Image (tube, rainbow, N blue to C red; front, top):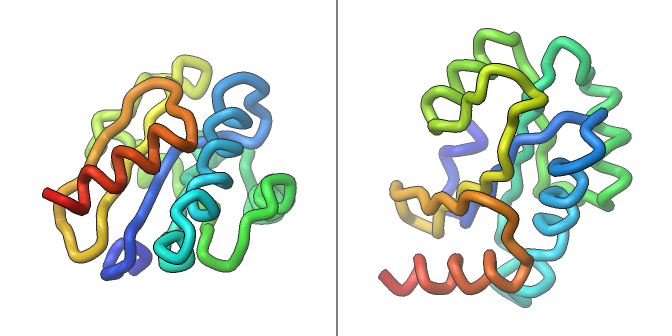
Length: 136
């Protein structure tokens, strides 16, 4: 249901006990809507836990609060097999949470095409990619 929106969407994968990649990519995501100005007020963000065995909804809520996540940012978990299926479908499964890589997926408004950004991106780079994708 969250994906069935006409709003722009940015998604990443995290786990709450990660001390390397996840805090960095989550902080970057937290800055993107503000850098988009008025456009950013429509932005939806989704962070999916890659550690569903340990990341409870309560832990994800506390993690979201750390990054001042607003109403339009959802932190999700699910059954391990469902999370794995999503990771496989988005070519982001690396076998183990400790092997995860930074990846950001972005879908412009009214589009079915996803833009994939592998590696660490700055908020400005994500904004540039977003603006480039909506012009296509």
